[in-house]
Length: 558
Image (cartoon, rainbow, N blue to C red; front, side):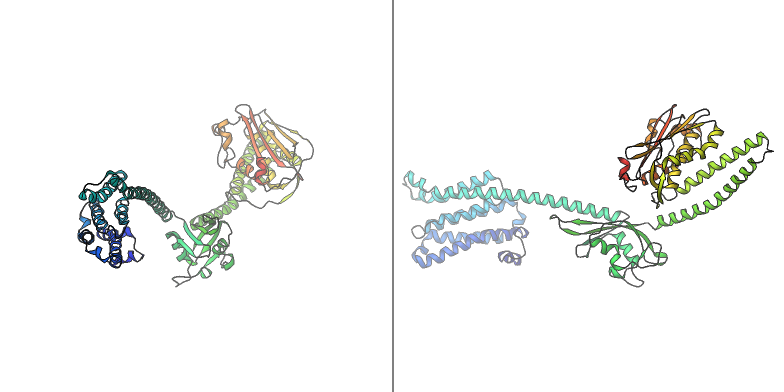
């Protein structure tokens, strides 16, 4: 009853939330209230009409119908059973209309209430229209048939009200069916939305990444379980909660607290985009190192709605990198020091003219293998920090001069292998770059050309200008590289199948490092090759003053 009154007073309860009995009473009540109003009007306008038996019978029938609405347990019956009520309403309206004839006109339109009830039920449109038409005709023609002797035009004149009621029924049915279809569509969209929301919640709780969503005012909107763990790690000792300004957020590798204005959350909320910035949360053995990225998101109108921060725990990764760096530093000392001594003593022994030819040959083999081992150690050390971009000491260089120097440095190795080295110089080629890096590229290319060529072969070093580029080509007559391997020869730790079959030792790092250095200089390193014929490696670096930024990797694509 409270819900029924709440609906009548336009409260918080919806009509659909009521029970079957309350809905029946609420649907019947407008007709009974209108009939009561008709009774009051007639009491003042024509009191004599109140004594007519049909009028009183109609009022009594309406009251009985309202009583049935409240008494019958509609919830236990099929849903369509309640539609008997609006059909009975036609009887009540017909009796009142007949009893008030001459006193009030147009009372037949009261049948619009049962018509709207029937049409609003959402049942079959054709059946509802047929029932409304039949009930309306019975309501207006029954009194004429009871009197008898009526002319045909009298029956036709009474068709106006039924036609109006049928029109209302059709319109109401169409509107109801359209509303039901829209409601079903909305419910379907809501179900899909809820499914997507549950999927998103499951994903966010499953991934091992902390996710924090803040609105445009800087207030936390969402925080997954992983982010809560990181938040608890950053809390000051003994605190259960703390604002962002009091959290223990340190710069990686230091004990310096990050100033509030420089902290990720504040910067991200100000619209700044963060990419994998590393911080330390908390202190002591429970501290965690995290990589933080942030992106802003906008609402449907395009306005800034907030920011999403992703925090990845990289504590173990950072520890592993530091352990690796420590190991490589130790390896650098433990390997390079004895190798340097070995090479030094080998050079001293080679200067001894009293050595026999066989001993001198053995020393050269020892020296060559020691140099190869040192180069492998240097390559591994250079690749120790994968993906790093070390600062380059850029100076003005002459690429042609560096190529000549590389040929001179490789001359002893070429002579011992019986390979000729030819230089085709096109004059000075000024470039701006890191000398150590460029020399490493040239040494690697020349060394590979010698290593994979047979005795009696020719290695040609060519330098030339090509538009805005300084170009160096290293051509050999070696074993060549299969076409399927050309795409991966510049990938770390990758070697061609022909190189593996040859049994020639190598780490698969030299070309990868050379390619990275060329890219850092705004240039590129390319290769063309044919198995059994040889390979051509082409190094392109921007000419000094050519307007190509050495830092632009995109220039390497030009």
